Length: 319
Image (tube, rainbow, N blue to C red; front, side, top):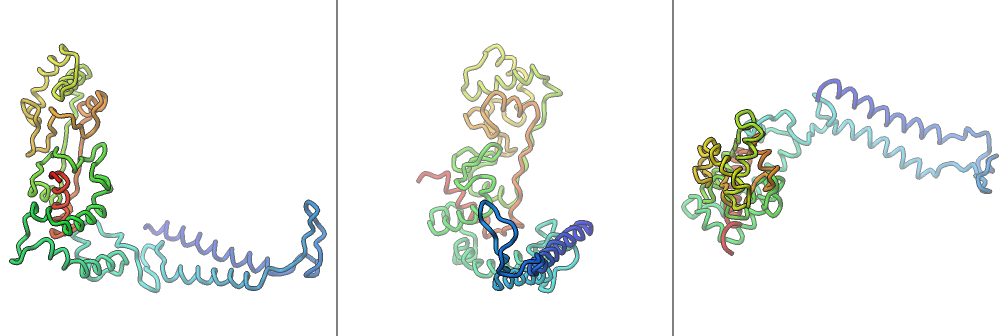
């Protein structure tokens, strides 16, 4: 946080706390000119108010919250730029910009998040190793782990914590995020392919073709792509699109079957990552797509990735 925002939030915080204290002090005094317990000179809807003071326990509770607010601000000033407070506490390392920096600070960090992560690694690290390694200290085959109910449950929990934000809690994805519970894979569905995707991440780039094809060309290529997937289309328009498709064949293949090496989708099935409507297909051709799967190897470590891979692999296997 910049110095400006530090000063801004500090001033507002102190203003509110001090303002509450002054208001409480002012309302605790009898400034009405009417003796306590006597009726006030005004009434509302036939009800006349008595000049009764606030209960002392109520006033004391207010003062207590004000004092706690001040002490909390001194102990946990998370709004300051260069001071962590009397308890030297931070919720997380805001200066960390990469997994490498996070690993470097792991042992010395005062942040609550990092302390909890370190404690969790010490507590559950042995469990992960027991499930992921064999007796010789070598990683078990992912397909074998996928048949172990206990290991799959652990992998599922790790998936829910780290992957469900994009792929959904049921791993069926959404527009722009692949469904992991079927047998359609951009980069291959073998265990080693899945683990590689998790460890290193993926970046699938579909270039924009609007400058080369023009609107009519986009329409024709989209028609041909829809025909490849079995849709009924304008035959003449599809033939024109087939002639232009030569530019797409380098990635998607001459028959439209796609490429696991390049992560190019199969155009001959009914699975569309960004939508199956004509408009969605035309938008993809016109504007391109840039799908990014972040690398989790440095973030989670290979043991956790190995177990997540086993869980993901188990989703596409016959039950």
